[in-house]
Length: 74
Image (cartoon, helix red, strand yellow):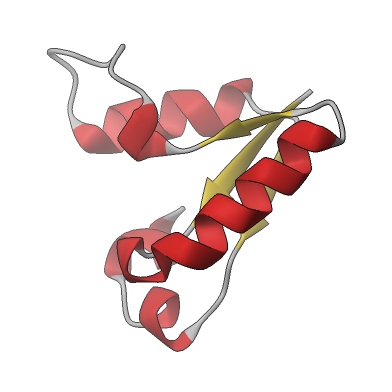
């Protein structure tokens, strides 16, 4: 199972904790900043592809994330 985590990079500490817990439960936590397979594709296309390939989308909704336009698009 792949879980896409939508977040702000300003919340890195929370994101890393969430990803570790997801992986400890046996699922794969998808973080766009760790995906280097999208060379040559736009960030938007890379994110759309990753969301389509994921089973679950989790939004880590903080003040930082709410202010980030890309999180609202995801």
